Image (cartoon, rainbow, N blue to C red; front, side, top):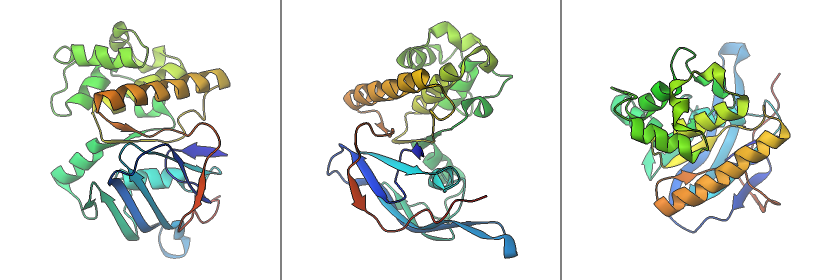
Length: 245
């Protein structure tokens, strides 16, 4: 059973969190892909809420729609119906500058970090581009780059190296640093440990827990992560309808 940090097939599991105002509200969202006879419903009336300072986890079989929901939340897919509100604002129809702003406020850490990193660009260039998409220069942002690499337990000199020079666990740390360097308000982690061995999985989860504590102190970001310990279930409207393929 795989997981990302949002909701479960049977319900929502919450790890701590507060009764603060909602940061993300998903109401009765339906997502369909394909056209004509091949059109398939991937998400079926999904509703959930993420409050500031709260962590949610979504659990389901491979192909059940978890990554589809993640892509929908960051604006890569458009719902057929339903509403997504971020910080009280409806995200429907966002284009141009407003869509780019949303994508910086909500960051997605991908399942496969290697495919999301340009093999021809150094890690420093990747982080500089995240910090400043229009004019990311590793030298200009060297201090910030070194800081984020240090936060994920990588040396500053890693900035001069290329993705293929790192292990899978190290690349996942780089993907986390890149997402955090944008200083978003919400991070969605899409099965970020599924391709790692058990020891490395534990290292990454421990890193996420530490970052969440550190960044809460800095008041920089609401970091979503898979829950630890037994989840507390509650009923929720909607579900991921079926396994595809």
